[in-house]
Length: 287
Image 1 (cartoon, rainbow, N blue to C red):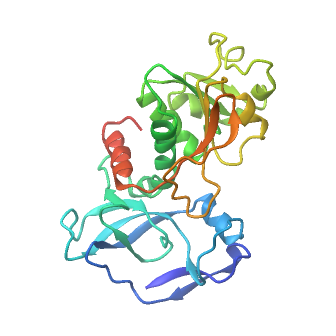
Image 2 (tube, rainbow, N blue to C red):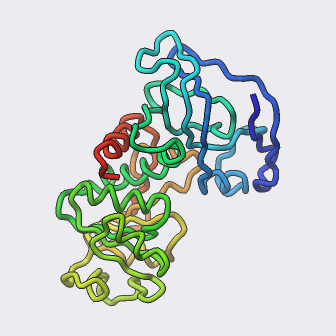
């Protein structure tokens, strides 16, 4: 099969297209013929040696993909050849990839396209885990999403609304209407208002909300200054961010940078159940 191999950690220009052996699925695995793959910031960060952990070289980049099941292992009963699936697994920049049937993939919802499905896994699961697991978001709570027009942010806005939260999205001028169309109750244009510099970290003045701090703040990676951690949630609130580690398969919260009584938590662990949750919300038209 053909695959894009990374030969050195000096950037994406170190990729080369090569012919390598097609992998074989184990007893609990599925072999997927990939139709589409998504490029994530994590792929570039890994290629540029920005992570503390590095895989052996040459390495096949790519973590998100969508394709058709080509073959299944002896113990696999949940998938069959011909099934259209999507999921997250290292090695997606290739014609074929082997994935664990119980962890890495789900059936593609009929209402979304192949291209859309390929872009769901990492971004959507990160948003879901951050809000549901680390933030313990509940109905009628307030959540502020910084970088609301980014990959994680666009999913976070929709998922938070599906949970019944009151959502404020922070974005640039050109994406204000996009974030509003995703369901945000209030939108802050950070090019017009620096919400981190307010004496009392509230969402109000610029949105018409009551003068109350947000109960949780979700930030997309690299989109705001360090001060956001300290000023975008109320004292007992929680700041949620993405894992800085390579692979980003985080199970337990990693507490750093206290925010009042709250802490910064990271989320991004691959779980098939979470992909299924995203799939169910897609089928219901919630995202």
